[in-house]
Length: 426
Image 1 (cartoon, helix red, strand yellow):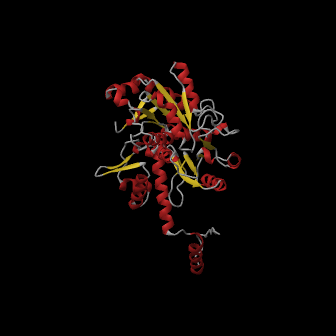
Image 2 (cartoon, helix red, strand yellow; image 1 turned 90 degrees about the horizontal axis):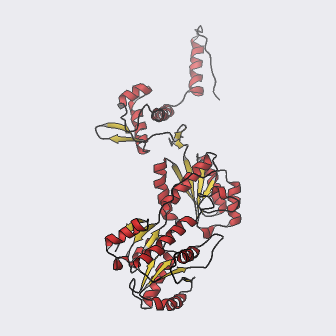
Image 3 (cartoon, one colour; image 1 turned 60 degrees about the vertical axis):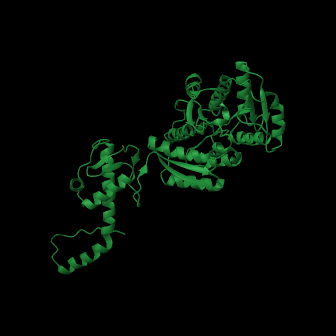
């Protein structure tokens, strides 16, 4: 409890003065260490405010440390410590022999630093990873980092092993200043009942990469385009690519005929083949039974040497490469193959797998954008340009065996309007 003592200036009694001196230090003073910390935080906030108010412009040089110390009425060591913290946080930049410069604005920062001098952001988003990382989520997490830098968003990465643990983490995210959270989970791990409970009880807007029934607003994309546009564009590109290379038979290999309530990739494959007059439609499906590949290769044998196969993803494509080699097929001479997702091991099969890069950068940026929209009370989706398919060009597609390299690049980027994400082992 603090006591405020008003001492009459006319009191002359030495005894009273002594008693007052004994009482005041015990009740109202703050340690020098605490005072230093408060001054240090005040200097940090003052510099942030000056940058936010454009007193110090982006790229501009700060006054010398001793001059700042006089301005802030503190020790120059305190200013030096504050500047070092802001340099570590990426707001300032220290240039040898030149001084300290403003690196980026601070419009996204707010509030007094915490006891550990952590600047809290108005644009702080939690990333909740459920049962990961996985082959899919690992590259997505990397893209979150890149997107956050360009969008000036602070991220709080957390992982959960159970849905109950996930709720506890979201509650902690709110306490640390997060304005919304992004749920990263593979579809196979999404238990509908538990996901609904998480959304119902979450203290923060919770954004997801899937359409959850009853919570469509929390998806990163409008439901009418979610999931289809990249699959459809990629299928058009893949079919067009193999057609331009001169393959007479373009087949499709997937894991199942139909999954979920929206169209799968086979539907887009058949749609493109029928609309363009490419024939025949050669759709085949395989699950965990490796012997199924012998049956599929037998059915495709009449087209050997003139056959190209579009696979649902890199896993099925790599399984096909292995099965074909065991059956004596030579790739890509007997059969060209293209996958989807650009999984890490796809470049290590023989021949290295041509594939379509999943748009992790787009997905990460769109998830963060949706989180910011919902945190500010907006329910409508912002318009965002949809990216073109990104091809990872390797040996398995047979492109360099049929076209000169420069013509192949022009085919991909100019005629088919796709992007060459990477060109490896061609």
